[in-house]
Image (tube, rainbow, N blue to C red; front, side, top):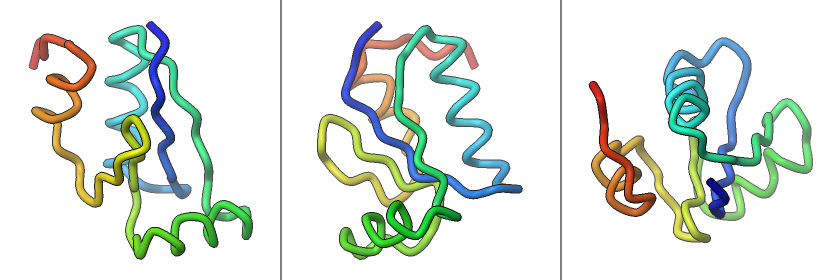
Length: 80
């Protein structure tokens, strides 16, 4: 499934791992940007986001993980 998802992550971030694993299990492609890369950290800060995971879902910022929004936007049925 192709979608427009960018996930800003960092190492040792359980919520980041959860979202990435969930999307992978659902067959959803996404772009991961680890903020240890200064360019990606600055991109995230430009959105006034200061915590990971920070998600761009169809270019709309998601400042906290909202599984209902992810599922409805991507037409996914949560199995959890």
